[in-house]
Image 1 (tube, rainbow over the protein chains, first blue to last red):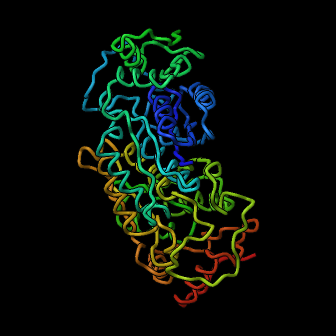
Image 2 (image 1 turned 135 degrees about the horizontal axis):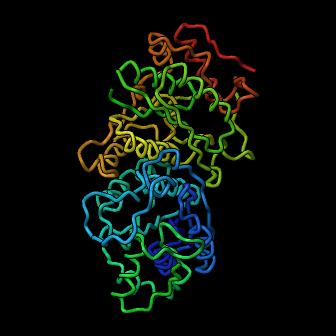
Image 3 (image 1 turned 90 degrees about the horizontal axis):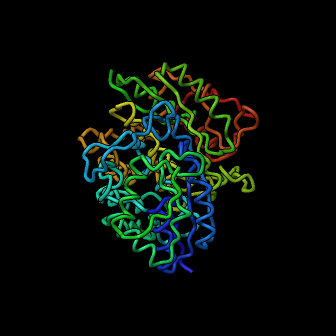
Amino acid sequence: MKRAVVLLSGGLDSTTCLAIARDAGYECHCLSFDYGQRQRHELERAAHIAQTLGAASHRIVRIDLGSVGGSALTDPSIDVPKDRPVEAGSSTPPITYVPARNTVFLAVALGLAEVLGAEAIYVGVNARDFSGYPDCRPEFLEAFSALAKVATVAGQEGKAPRIEAPLLHLGKAEIIRWGLRLGVDYSITLSCYDPIGDAACGRCDACLLRKKGFREAGVADPTRYA
Amino acid sequence: MKRAVVLLSGGLDSTTCLAIARDAGYECHCLSFDYGQRQRHELERAAHIAQTLGAASHRIVRIDLGSVGGSALTDPSIDVPKDRPVEAGSSTPPITYVPARNTVFLAVALGLAEVLGAEAIYVGVNARDFSGYPDCRPEFLEAFSALAKVATVAGQEGKAPRIEAPLLHLGKAEIIRWGLRLGVDYSITLSCYDPIGDAACGRCDACLLRKKGFREAGVADPTRYA
């Protein structure tokens, strides 16, 4: 059975990505990161989601991005912005941007793909919402794909994993509709940047975008808000 | 003062790289990784070297590459090869190859460069010895440089850090001669894959290459072997 590494944060996008990879016939090996994020609750969700969606394996790799700093998600002294208008296509990334995070995550995924002989790496990045994140753009994914072709032994042998970003050009409502068609139960996912206990704050950018997505999809929002 | 991030393992190559970056007028911010390597003693050496060579800062970032596996350096059940002929230009990497390691290290360095506003990232990769490592080749560094241009906000603004690999095409003896001209004391560096306590094993590939380098440079080898 062909294998894929799936980056799984436990949020709406990456969970949909896992369902898509499974639907495409892949044996899915999920990869999550304990990187010092304030929303560490997402890791328990990720483990539950991997199991629920029948992943072949799930790894949580610890990496201390807090020592690199520069983000509200890894620095407890910086507040997560709340109640701001959700703007698509902003040109500067918000303070929740973690410098080079997707580069780091994809790099580890590339190593795991090499070890497992995986043909694909699935990543739930989305260029339409939050386009202020430089590492969510098509140019970034193209450059990483080119890097994958030369960075590993598999790449040298012409067997570099493809970087699959099926959500890249979709809006949240389209993502939700696709996931629902594949049977995803979104009540087990957590998108919030600043959860209160196990519940979503309902006010950070991620929560506001998610709410808007369910609204636009015309679907009841199953999220538990604090 | 212009800033550089310097990847520092505590070995001969990366220490020379730090001396070169300093000599080029950079304020040097060193970055080491505690990635589950068996040669963890190198981290103490790295800290000592950063201080001795006047680095502005030194971070040790923990990342658990052991959970990715596939290498003798991170899997205690795989032996480090000993006493084998040192072959330059081998086409398949040895079992000490850690899949995607340089991609991961450079990715974190890229994040740190973004936070510090660094103009350059120095990395001590060397394509001449050990060319079986795919991520020590010029093609790899070129692809990573291209990625850096689109992966971060600095990149988007045309201020991506340059990836500097001054040792790329040099042999060990040339590296040693350059470092000595810059005043590097190689007795404080540790290149060994499988040190015994604080002393080098003298028999792994890294030790054999290092010994050969001092021999060819016509310089006494200051390494303490077990």
